[in-house]
Length: 131
Image (cartoon, rainbow, N blue to C red):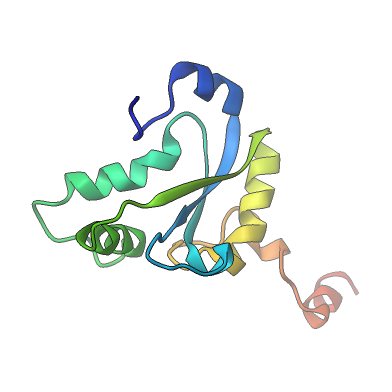
């Protein structure tokens, strides 16, 4: 069994999903172990580790914080853990869930997610928008 990908049956059952990459070196609550949140289909959740492996011959782009974390995890003798947060979603549902989770969990995400500006708003910001 190939642990670096989902087989066709699993992919067909998952549909669109939101996933998190976790650091296995940290032994505390999930929220402290998550460093990246993404939306995907098929084997998307495995692509980041694959990209880091392909880049082993050269330096990583400084903006690729998640790849640096993955490299550090591997250098310490571990593999990144993948957690499927929720599956069987449509694209809009997945984008909404991702945008809610990134600000609190995705420390290595480059952007706050699609529609991330409508999540985690203080009451003053809500008043500015709608009053």
